Image 1 (tube, rainbow, N blue to C red):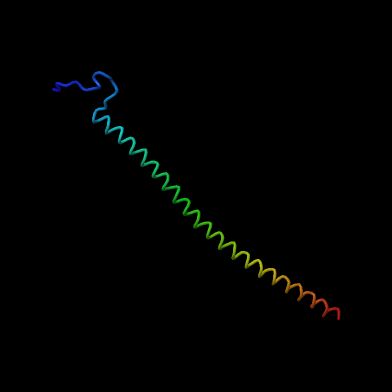
Image 2: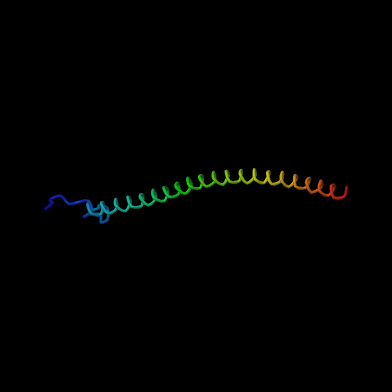
Length: 90
């Protein structure tokens, strides 16, 4: 038995037992772990978002090229149609 009284015997709540300290530390570690996990998920989503954004930009660039080619083909088709009309009337 202890011969010297603990401080918490005079002031209840000032001392924590080893188990209470361990529990408090465990809770703090769990909260930190959850924060780290959430941050990790956020980072992964951001990285995935950047990859997706990069792919979207590449796709958009290709669509613009395709649209340009379609416009060229349309102009050529109009010219051909115009020449065909002239040939029929001429």
